[in-house]
Length: 187
Image 1 (cartoon, rainbow, N blue to C red):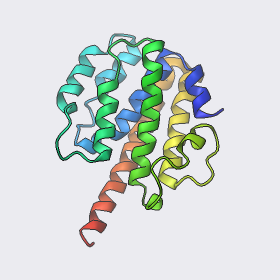
Image 2 (image 1 turned 180 degrees about the vertical axis):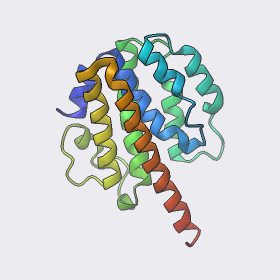
Image 3 (image 1 turned 90 degrees about the vertical axis):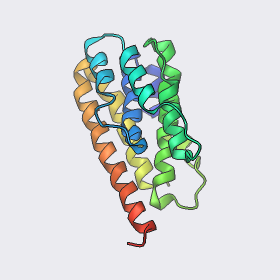
Image 4 (image 1 turned 135 degrees about the horizontal axis):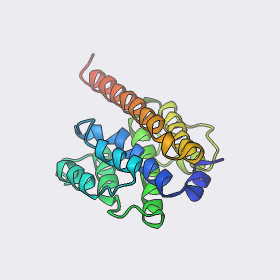
């Protein structure tokens, strides 16, 4: 099943986990503490509201800076757009937008995508055609799909594995950024 179909069929918890996982993988690019979104994950597990945790995260990294690059703007928009109410109707458009934004972030940072337009292949990839996607983007697409499948199959019991996938993706993204910084500094 394609990512688009999984998002269309997901329940509130799956949608919230999907959007949160995308944000969780990308937020450290702004220098965020890895634990900043932990209260939001906990609220998904116990069914409580995520408003206080969301406000804390926004307070820490919500305002755009004058020198923000496109990656930082995309990540900040994911955070700012998170709905205060965690209902399926409120969360579905956010989860979909986070999916697209996260794939764009990965496209912008993927060394194999240099010179390609940011949107190239993302819509087709989300619809199931992954041919021609750069490796970092294809891996992010697989993670997004896996999160939704885990929640669809295991409900709240899939949250731990979804968080593990997010942590793995965060490490990959950090390594890419670190490698890129070293190459730009000449070594």
